[in-house]
Amino acid sequence: MSERLYIFDTTLRDGEQSPGCSMDLNEKIRMAHGLAALGVDIIEAGFPVASPGDFEAVRRIASEVKGPRIAGLARARRGDIEAAAKAIAPAGERGRIHTFIATSPIHMQEKLRMDEASVLAQAVASVKLARSLSPEVEFSAEDAGRTDIDFLCRIVEATIAAGARIINIPDTVGYMTPDEFGARIRILRERVPNAHQAIFSVHCHNDLGLAVANSLAAVEAGARQVECTINGLGERAGNAALEEIVMILHTRNDRYSIETGIHTEKIVPTSKMASQITSMSVQANKAIVGANAFAHESGIHQDGMLKHKQTYEIMTPASVGWRTNRMVLGKHSGRAALKDRYAQLGVSIKSTQLDAIFSRFKALGDKKKEVFDEDLLAILHDDNSDVGERISLISVHVTSGTQGVPEAAVTLAIDGQQHSATGRGDGPVDAAFKAIKLLVEPNGRLLLYSVNAITLGSDAQGEVTVRLENDGRIVNGQGANTDIIVASVQAFIAALNRLPNTHAKEVHAQYSGV
Ligand code: KIV
Ligand code: ZN
Image (cartoon, rainbow, N blue to C red; front, top):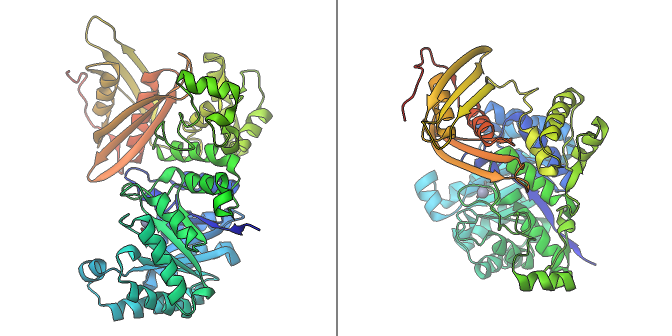
């Protein structure tokens, strides 16, 4: 009989802490529904005390998303714990407070300026308070990887005695190696007298590329909850990637004999959803969810594949949700088929959104023969019907070519008013961006501009990501269109809409020089 591993997804909390990855309320709710459909056991929905927006997102997810447990993060402080308790309350018995305090010497001395005794006392008091306000409590010893093992044993024992049922051991800075980290979990389970009363959990960061390996070493040592994120999103180099952990356990069940509740065929759609919502593209050679993960290029490999698929494939593309028949709908398909296909992709379309999305689907069907899943997810991005963006594109027209200076005429609606400008630049995209900069401020510093063809063929939609920085705030925007200039302008506008206080410039010159 296989044992069960609980998958704790922190895409909406640690994942959202990746630079430029912040999501708005509707995006978080959409992502949470996708995670529930994927079959995760726990969704860490956010850090309620961090901002009113975070609080509201956790509260809405706790009331709307059925199935998984809903966790809210809280430092080991009364205000944090009370805010988390209020935010997760609508989840009832499925609510969990996840409280943490740092336990490594460097964090205690330099960050908290507290000694071991006060950290231990604060951890115990916080777990007791959290337990009085929520049905389930998880305690994390932040930077447990670099924590003195004797102190770690003492604080784990005390927090279990105070009522924590899940003990999380984070490798906060991604410093551990698999053998060391596995040994740490083994020591805790052997030395802490009440260890059997808790589920041990791990939360590994990927600074040295070892997050997945360390998580698996911990599972071998008896951890039964793994904290992870879709596409490995997260602080700095990210967290352990959910899709990798799950597929290792699934593909090598002969070695681990551990099951998860994940519906593996939903992995790729959920990955695409996360990438679209956060505007963080997935690298092509990323395991499981990268575009090349099942592509066979060399003649020898192709020959082997034709003779027997298992020569070069250890799992089938279909088992993780890559569709072999990738053309899903055409321009003659109806609303019901469209809605149904979105449901299969893990996206529930509200009836108020359907008309707008359907007309964009038809417009795309007129432009390209085949409409793929990627196209369907991309057109969701343009759906501002319940978002109310301040800046939207009315029109863009460019002239460019081998002669003359590229020029772009752009008309935007900004706070309901129409504004137009013309820009010149090094190419049509540069010209269009310069025109937009004449109309909007602040308009940020361009940190990243990247273009991907999201499906095959010269009529493919181009997907553009733009990353802007203003006043230390980093935001991403994405656009997708068969016209790459339009996609670029949409991405720029999407990023501007995420910068605080963007507004129309009072006076703008007609041209911005090259
Ligand atoms: O990396 C970390 O230590 C964390 C904790 C809050 C669990 O994210
Ligand atoms: Zn973390």
